[in-house]
Amino acid sequence: MKVNAIIVGADGTDNSKAAVRWAAREAQRQGLPLRVTHVYDWEWREARYDSSNVYLDDARRHAEGVTATAVHEARVAAPKVAVEGDPVIGHPAARLLAETEHGQLTVLGSRGRGGFASLLLGSVSQRVATHAATPVVVVRGRGDVTEGPVVAGVDDSPTAEEVLATAFDAAAKRGCELEVVRSYLPVVPLWMDKRADADAVAPDADQQELAKLEAQLAPWREKYPDVPVEVLLTHHGIAGELVAASRRAQLVVVGSRGHGVITGTMLGSTGLQLLHHADCPVHIVRPKH
Image 1 (cartoon, rainbow, N blue to C red):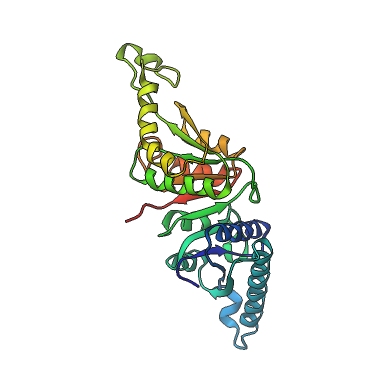
Image 2: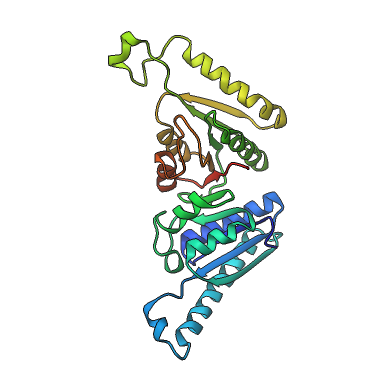
């Protein structure tokens, strides 16, 4: 069950329940098993003086209840999916990162409590999203949305091919349109340097950039002929464009590393803005090694 399963973190909050439902439906789409993981931290003050194990027993019972509820939620959302779940003791981020090594995809809510330490995509989800060895989906905003396009933020880095592979496959499995968003800053003539902004476009720059993007998309269009594709080329910041697109999308797909306007790791501005402000689930693609 652990190998190639989808892993979902559960803590009993509404955000977590939305993540469990999303993960269950995704497991059904991909024909994969689902593993529900609830991590409870045993490092609180009272536990260190608990010679009778009362606190530990109470914590374990609570964790088992959270896990059982999440497993039930998953089975209701996707009855045909094989689901298993068990609570584990440890630091939530560290244990979830360890779990990701046995999964194909890890799904998290955007906020948490208890085992997820009351995060607003801070400690746990952000750490897992930035350091997991496998792709991560953070379910936020309209977590149960099933309408609208899949949106992909694409640059010309090596990770872009993984983003396109993931986005085309997601759109095909959902039977929806794919929107590909690319941002670039055109080369501006020196005589225009004092008014260089998003509207100062060098001649034919857009057409050249669009031709590059269409060449990048060509093999994927051929592989997925039934997926309608819309291309958006913009001179504005990619983060703002993707956050805006998330309000009409059911999923936004981005790479964890890139260059140009999608830069650095997901700790950079683009990833952070999406993970904090997107209005739909965000799929963070990891580069294959």
